[in-house]
Image 1 (cartoon, rainbow, N blue to C red):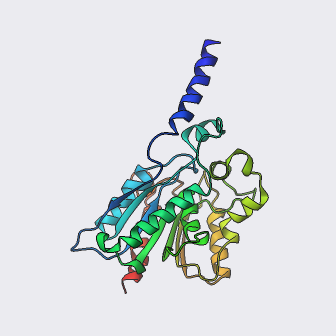
Image 2: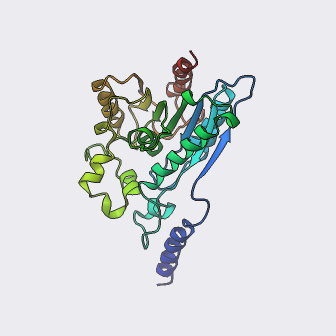
Length: 274
């Protein structure tokens, strides 16, 4: 009985603590003025819309971009809670859900657009990069963005894409985004399935994943690639054989093969300097 009470107390404490802390935060990593390309990339870490991998998919990518003359901005956006991730449910409705995270990335875009001179950023070169669930959010930052502050390019890395294809959906991300009950709402799932929402004016996309991804089915990226092809959207899709999931821009967590994505991205993004 004592252990049962302790376990319940831990669950409640984890969920309660998720209420505290800054709701959203944007941390800039500005390029050196001598090498600044004027490009700005908002980085959305992954974490199944329930927590955020701020190091591997946030700070490390930001410092890498910064070292290559690209202004990086790590976005801490609102998510369900660590409790929702660990235990699979929300206690008393604690935690954030869609569209909170979309509102946060829209806020970040507005911040950079309206302070472009302060950050030494070219407003024609502002994009969003995201990893895993953050890759899904990166796509939504244009597809569902109702503001005038829209990204000029999108970079989903091993992204969650579909929310309505039961064969390939990442259920934990769907639950994190929509909540316990809305995850079963067909219209909501359809509206958040990126592969079904690509518009004719979608900006260029840089897409990467690995065939051996054990977390998010590799078919998610294949669905996105096909949808972009149907709409003739300029994009680069790279599917590596070995690399898994969650490596971000970290040298230690990925294979020598998928590590090449960073060089490929720098080549791709250089087009925005022409």
